[in-house]
Image 1: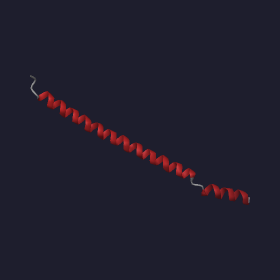
Image 2: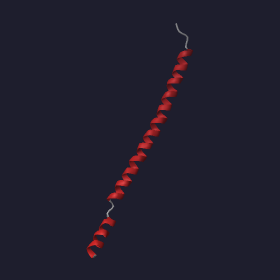
Image 3: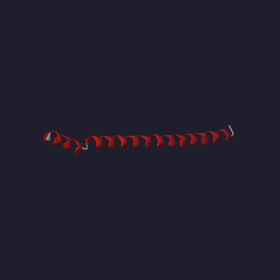
Image 4: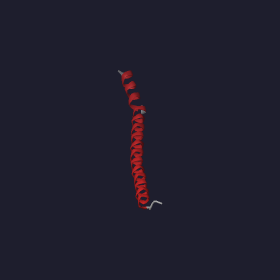
Length: 62
């Protein structure tokens, strides 16, 4: 029984599983930030091209 308790204490003191979960959460947050940033950048670029198109449509042609 003593050996079982000692092995159980060793298992409880290991933090590899917790570290893996933390890294997983970190990767998830980074991915969400990238997706949000790409969406915002896409909207900004879309606005830029729409403004350029509107300007060019107003310029008289030779």
